Length: 266
Image 1: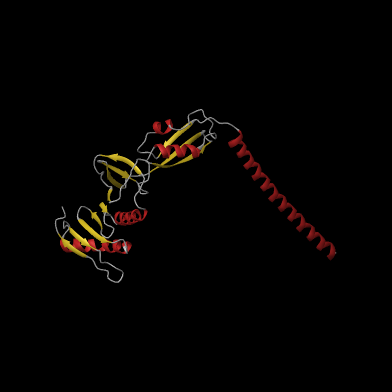
Image 2: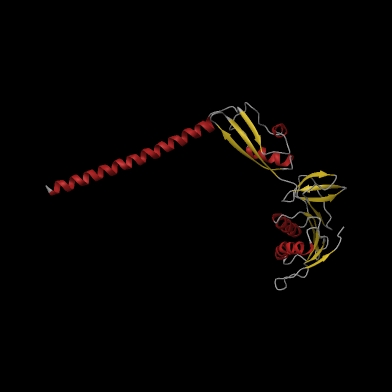
């Protein structure tokens, strides 16, 4: 009797294990069938696009964007070359940085084009015009005056600027420019210009109120961080409307000092 009882328990355990294995195999097979069916639906069957939507673009209209693509209502929803469309739009429209495609099957067939645009961050005076550039220094547009909210870059380098192309400014200089601009704007300041004409005397204009001399580019991050606190102290001591010159050219990690001289900077 004891042997039969043990055998019975073993048989029940083996049966339970077989049932569990069948359930796992069934679940895997079912998942494979679902994936295969989805692949067939999305790749082997042609669906006309019922809707084509464009979002995220504030500079160019949906009509302008669609005119440069091969997409139109009635095309095959999975038959477009997304990479080609992205490259075409980025090349032809300077403000467009990238295009993301989202496809829908239910409740309707369609494609949504999500545009990511650059903004006017920097500015160069060139051939009598002001050419704006985004945060990556790609030239975006041309104006007759410096647009509000942009930082004018002053340099002695001979530039050859073209809309849609990256400005050919020295890479190390632009890294310094980007560091100064991003740090100051994050702290709530407006940078009117960054002057790198003299690499040993980098100057910036802040809030149309202070001209700052950083000296050479060494210790630049430390100088910018020190400047942020220094401006607050200057305003507390001299008043909200004070203007003048701030000298951080001698600032080092061991000698963290700056000097302020109130004066009419204009």
